[in-house]
Image (cartoon, rainbow, N blue to C red):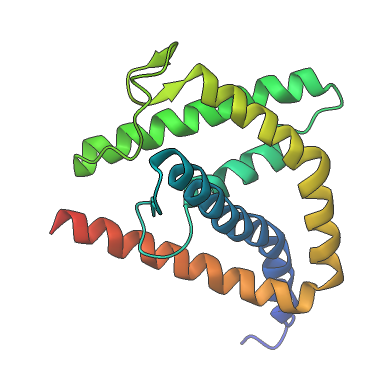
Length: 180
């Protein structure tokens, strides 16, 4: 009955190849973002401060931010790119903050003491910082991460897919732990 159906095993590897690089960016951004967050919060609190919603050493918001930046904000005009990064990072930050407060009653960050902030969720200062960091991602990090991924695809593809699976499982367990 299925003798005329062609072997489709190549489609699985093709799909995994397409997922590999975004998973690499997401996992890299999540871990490096977490490290920057630990550094920033530890310096501003004067002691080691481990932030985050998840149990592991990653903040998925930074993974999503690097994906938004790499895929939606690249533009020849850097001012346009900056504007897109500013807007998308502000929307991401506002949305995640609202979701965390609505679902779990948890405030992950608080910008209310900063001028030009929208309540606790978004501040002009940090949106400007995200814009600058996003331009660094576009001009320096993403091209180098792409080269690194292309050079080591066979190792980075499976490890990136596994890393995203671990992060997703951790976020699910962390969410359930807050609900129950």
